[in-house]
Length: 315
Image 1 (cartoon, helix red, strand yellow):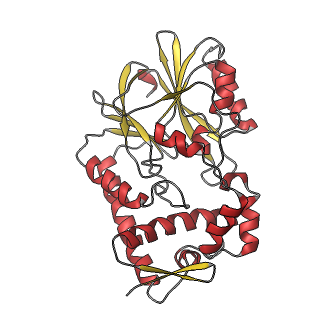
Image 2 (spheres, helix red, strand yellow; image 1 turned 45 degrees about the vertical axis):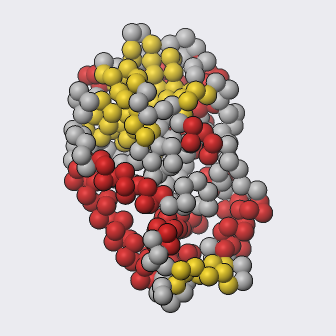
Image 3 (tube, one colour; image 1 turned 90 degrees about the vertical axis):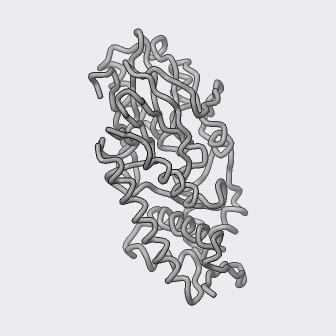
């Protein structure tokens, strides 16, 4: 995409996907940044190197910072990057509200204990900053709304903001109609399956939202996808079909596993490999919960409270 003045910036992560892709685009001597990376020292070092490579004075040359969504690996460095550059940050209002959400220790423990996580694991997760839903610190002081239909000149191409929820309720992708390019954030990836999860807040049925969004995307012309993780890819419609099939299959598996009455954590352990880190088990539990919320909403499962835990059943 560099022929259009759009550059991929790959920033290391300390967990899971190993790195996140942000994007840097030049327009009339100024630059726009799409996503910022996680708040940690490796992110600052990467941006320092990128600014030096392109001859960018970050205190003068950055016009704006636009965000696909509020997850820490995309939004976390935005406050520090704004302090550094003075540029406004643009984020969808729905995700802005989620970015302000914070667990209390009591609500955190109650939610995950009800899902069947052992108390020792819940306490360990509380100490893991990546597992908490916390405001970015420092939080951007100039945070502008980002709405569907907003247009940005990224390099030589005009992109339109498109609201494609599921991964988060306010997830925004950027689409160029001329070249059929989609900057997809975490909405659509090739290397790993797009992560749709429920952790007790936000959209109560994110998987249904996501599948509905994918159905609408099947009518879009997409020549190339520039994702937040993994390689750029050129077979968007085939990938959309694969993702739909994956989640339909996962729903079938969760439905069967819930037949005799299990907690969300027990179902998750039955689906995913056992030799996973606690953080990865938390990730797995989020996907399992999204499937359970879908099946509950559609009447395929029932839930009962048994002591401090919730157990799922098929009638």
